[in-house]
Structures are given as structure tokens and as C-alpha cells.
Length: 341
Image 1 (cartoon, helix red, strand yellow):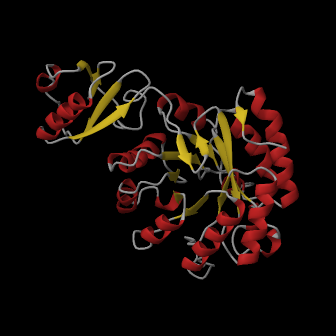
Image 2: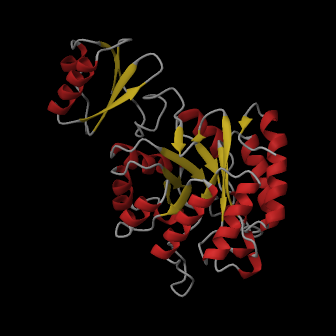
């Protein structure tokens, strides 16, 4: 249920409604809007008696929320959310570009890549300090040393940093070191990790699992938001299908559908979907064309020497080509762009 408050409502009236919701054994979620404040509630397992709330001062209307994803849906918040990562906005009029290596391998490799993508117009630096890998014998990342290298790259380039968190045990170390943390496809339904992310006050980049439905994807985001963290960015990164020419099938149809039913920003990862660098630029173009709020791509100065995902990493020259094409595409789809020459 959604409690809609009157325009110019007083804070004490909001507090009183929140207290009444808690008295009912539920959790209140105030949602400031452009004109009115609404208060959502979660935790109910059955119908909620509206009588205890309808007569409270400042209450204008009570609206039943029909979807199982309550905090992520537009029923509860019609206006688009804007998530800020440093000085970069996701979900506003501009598209944003996240770029960098799949994993932090060495200080020199990371710094070279950070300078490269910054000079070519990237907004946010990506890099994995902890890497969940299919094989236990594959490179697992540098851990805390990798976080220190990312901090150095941020200090030099001024770009905010995003890195993946893989478990609850290392969550605090990653949270302290980055501007936004990523929950990868393998962990999209790791509920203890999602709950821990909900207690953080840093933005979350949540990737869709390779087999998740739209509903499951939004309910994973719901776990984070129900915990109190409203700064969630959704990322489509490809699903498993019968394709035999790409690593995954990039489900671009989910982008406009997500934009229709959720207020959260939506970005696309063409690198993981493609698995081949020659497919990344065309897929990135398509992602912006269907309405994505940004892209996240992998870039490596020497992809043939990369310790993880080298075949899908763009070279510096290819990343420059991508940025040049985004400068053409974004005005065509009536989006502004932080991408500058």
C-alpha cells in the first residue's frame, strides 16, 4: 500500500504516519516526490487495514500496490530515480559510460587503462579487485591490494570507482574503498549479500543473472531497497540461450520494459554478453538506441595478456571508436551526453 501525503506536508505529519505503520508491524519507506511525498510500506503478508491511516493528518489518498516488487515499481514511485556516483548521474537526461579492466592485475596495467578511458571520455572507472571465477584455478583478483590500486587511480584521474563485492566477509573492505559496488550475475540471488547491500549507503550496480526473469531481477533489487538503500542501478548483461556464436544473448528487449515498469536507472554490459570484442561496439550502440541510461564496457591496454576475459576487452583504439559513435547516437535518441570530444 502507498500513502500519498498532501502537498507541502509537514515533517511531523510524515513522522506520525511512519509511526502508525510501524505500530502495525510494517516498515515505512518515505518517498519524496516533485510535488508530494508518498510513504510506501513493506512487510505485510496479507491485506492492510486502511482505516488506521486514512484519517491521519496530511494523508490524501491510499493506493493499493498490486505488483510483488513494491519499492522498485512505478506504482510506488512514478518519477525516474537518479542515482549519483560521485559527480556522475545515472537515470537523468545524460547517458553515462563505465569503463576499465575486467580485473585489477597490476598497478601499471590499471593506471594505464584508467588514464586511457578518462582521456577518451569515460565517467566511471571499473575494475575487479575480487573476482568470482568459474574455475577455482583461475585468477581470483588481488583483493585488498587491488582496492588500493583503484584508490590510486581514482586520486589521479578524478573518476569515481566501481568494483565487485563477492561475499559478506569482504563486503566492508570493498564498501570502504569504492564509490559504487557491483553485485554480479552469479550473486544476484545471494540474499545475504543483497541484505548486506541494503544496509549500505553507497550505490549498488546490480547485474541480472544469466537465467533470471524480469520479476526475479526486480525482486533482487527489492531486497536491497527494502533494507534501506534506494540507490540501485540495474544492469542487463546477457542471458544463457542456445546461441553458439556469443558468450551470452544480450536481452535488449528487457531495457524498454524495465524503463516502463521501474523508476530505477538501467544500463547495459555488452562486453559480458558478447564475449568477443568485435561485437561490443554494435551492441553498445543498440543499448543506447533502446533507451539504456548508460553502458559498462571492459578495456585493456593489452587484451591478449589479460588474466581474465581478454577476448571481450576493447583495445584503447576501439574504446575511442565507441565513444565517437556514442557522440553521434545520443542526440539521435534525444539524450544528452557527458561524452565530450
